[in-house]
Image (tube, rainbow, N blue to C red; front, side, top):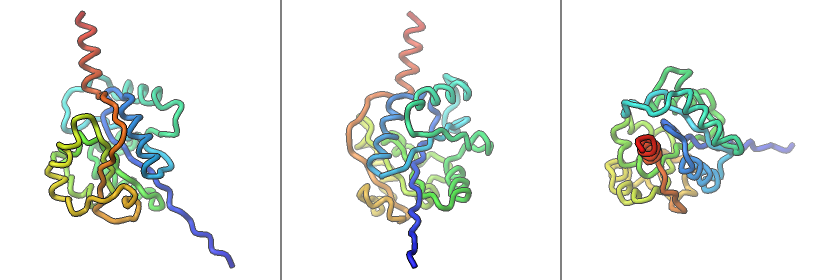
Amino acid sequence: MVLRVLKRRKIGLLGGSFNPPHAGHLHISKQAIKTLNLETVWWIISPQNPLKEDYYLTYGSRLKACNKILSTTNIKISEIEKWQGNVFSFKTIRILKKKYPRIQFFWIIGADNMHSINRWKNWDSIFMEIPIAIFSRPNQQVKAGLSLAAQKYQKYRVNPRMLSKGLKPAWSMQVGPQLNVSSTRLRTQITDQADV
């Protein structure tokens, strides 16, 4: 009798406002697929980031822009936060893990979010629920390494290849090519051009 071993699917989760989505989001998603050997990455579009007041684009416009930028990739969009009426990452992670118990999820963030993650609601539970892959952003890696979260979970920092071993908490800092682009910079450029 031959026993077939079922491999768990590996999917990355990249949450954000995507206000607007840009090449940097796409870049770290593709890096995550390659580095962590993921099947795909799901972009989780936040209906309303609790730490941000104003949005340049409506939810519908952000969704449309994400669909456009992802039209030729294997990266998918998830509207789970909109459907669940939820804006907190820790809840989203729990919901997805319960709904898809055979998938191994990885939380993906840019290094710029690592130094502010301690402001997120129940941020400690994110570290306890899911391996976290942090990707370099220009001028942000040192800040991320010195952040409150990095200091608190210092002994749980692992080599990127170890993230899939199922250890929790576990996080890694991915070093690689970087794109110097951000939603904030894009919004500023658009506003500046409109003022001319």
